[in-house]
Image 1 (cartoon, rainbow, N blue to C red):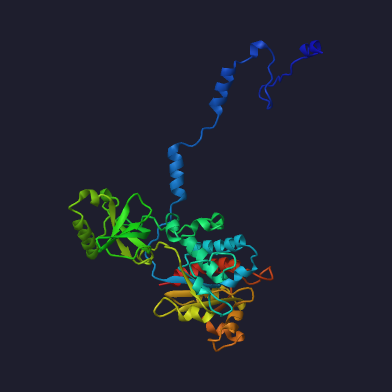
Image 2 (cartoon, rainbow, N blue to C red; image 1 turned 90 degrees about the vertical axis):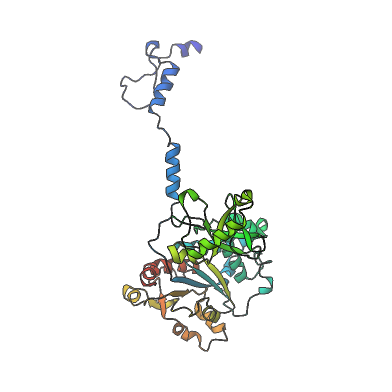
Length: 402
């Protein structure tokens, strides 16, 4: 047996260009192991350098720079009852996550959750157990939407039940730029007030290497939008507004006696959450509002003059077309209302404050649209209708908003 194997002829290839495994013909053609390794390393592709990886990361997280500020807003209204079809808390959470992602992608500024049954909301438990499986679906949706919109570095501060949320691992973080540079002079951040100072100022945690001293006394635990000043003094990132400069100067003057104390903080001023959007055009996340009935969606608007453009969505509406979108007027605050499994008519019929029947629902809106005509599915889910509608109307909003 051993003699047979020793006399067995070794395989070889006469054509050296031929692909396949290399076989040694005799000892004279043998290469040392070191020579083979060196030849292999010579043709081995090299991985990207650290500089290339850093550049790729910068491109991946680079936000498009808006050309100007944006005064107009887009709101959507959606019933919490769409969660009733989800059998587990994980499925409910995933569905809310889909809605939140869609709203961020299309720059939605306000999400109104209305009670389709018009029986009121269990607001006595608001903020306590509204994230549990048996809680009111409207409150559940509102709480998860708020949680998702909160920057990661603030979630443990703003949501005491953060560690108890079984669904937290199911949620993909949203990308509203609550921490991006907006121009050469300032830096906006979202923060939480952690304690007062000198009964005139407050200290804010903005998830930075230093806390921020702000120009006024704000209740502890409040979420605020801050314009940071002097975080990068070598780049002269200072606001040129006279009132802002005076406020910063006053805070610095109060700390001049203790230079070590002055070095502990960044300086900042409190601004409205809409300031980044209005001044620079950057999307700054959405606000969440709860409505006891569909009529409250309109009557409890946060805007002084309400919504000047209202759109209802239904498979019975006018099919969307270029003629329809070209007739949309200029607006300041647009509202798009979505219905549940049985449409907006169900909410209208249940609302006793409305003086119209389900057949007159379309008269409540400026436009009554079918944004997915010739649909192949018998039913389009609400989260699907949201994506289709916002994608269809995005260009119209951008051109007609003012």
